[in-house]
Length: 484
Ligand SMILES: Cc1ncc(COP(=O)(O)O)c(C=O)c1O
Image (cartoon, rainbow, N blue to C red; front, side, top):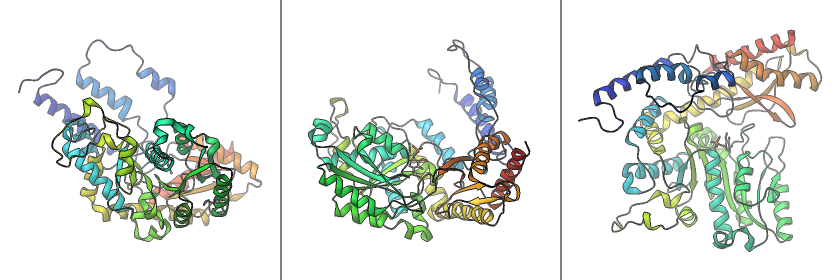
């Protein structure tokens, strides 16, 4: 076949692909030894790429050399076992293959006939996601960019279904302010959703939490009743299935009951923790999840997918269709009602990529049992870290880990620092110092108003030896800071 357009010959394409594969394998060979953060600065990185739009072509081998040095070798190693920051799961080998295939065939999942396998696989992995975590086995849903988009997708449906079809026509001006409820530990993306949906952050009730960082049901019930008495329109309660700060899980069964009693939509943000409901030993913690109207999941978190792969789950497809379907002449096709589901009618996006392939190939290649084991192993690593910190004089465990997040403080060598201020100062200073050290990548947060170091163990390549290295590194860097 003669090359067309911008293509190379097939043999050249194959040669270049093989070189690219070599670079990928080479990078995977450095996971244990390379610094997790490449110690580069913004001006340095900016300078590598500073040039006007290139007019002349660059030979592909030279381009691959450049990509290796500037992109692959400097990548922050969340694929490696020494990443603890944020919620960074690190991908799987089989997903790398899936991403290659997905780019190679370039399907557009907006319409069934543009990607028959894509459309079927997206429905399949949505149903698998639902049954894996014990939600509705016949779930409807949408694959989206991540947890933020999954929450936005769900809250849009919640708003439209709960407030009625007038919302689409009149906006929110057809009635009194609509209120929604979540704990003070709810992820920051919900506030963005509230703004985007025009609800007004003033009408988003942040309910205080108990000592275990779980929503206070008594305060929640009282707030809903007060809002109703004031003539407002309560419409949705959000439950956490694993907060980003500490991994706390709200009492989902009580929230489900309360939502039903008040005729509210019950949404669960399971972007970080929801997949852990697949682990038998964890299931009781998530009781009530099965009663939610919608669940936000992130396959790029605890299903170990490379970015991006979020998932909004619903009990069926109906609410999504009512919210997102808009007829357009250029999309109308009539293939005789043979059961085609055009995914653009069930999500905000028209054009959409093939996220389902990596999720499907991951379930198929490893099997659900092995994935559950990987999640359980992350939880065991967090428990091991908590044990080590609990028994160390120079560390303070800030909470018992609910899932795989552990927050703690370094107390100075042999725990000699006293008073909250010097300890807080040292822990704040530790975060940039650990980044500069490069052996591990970890960040901090604030719990109950005080700074903490926060480890999120969510990487199937991590084992207990890595946790030991984490503790040793923090101790080394902490002591060096104290000595300054
Ligand atoms: C509980 C929770 N919700 C939502 C999000 C946002 O997800 P994303 O970063 O994929 O948009 C996160 C991210 O960490 C999260 O932990």
